[in-house]
Length: 90
Image (cartoon, one colour):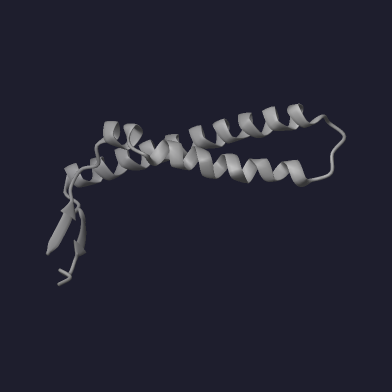
């Protein structure tokens, strides 16, 4: 079965499970800062890690939206969409 992606819906990109998953992954990576030696209190570091995860998530989502806009523009101009050849499993 051949599948071709011709358009990426921006609304479905932003309302899918993609933003929460990105946020959780980036929150876990920014919580790794808790294990570095620092003189600041725990809650300050926790708030800093949470804020850093929010900022990183917004950067990733803005990049994904810009990428989707560029992809949709290129497909509208005449570039062929991404094609996938999937095999059926019996």
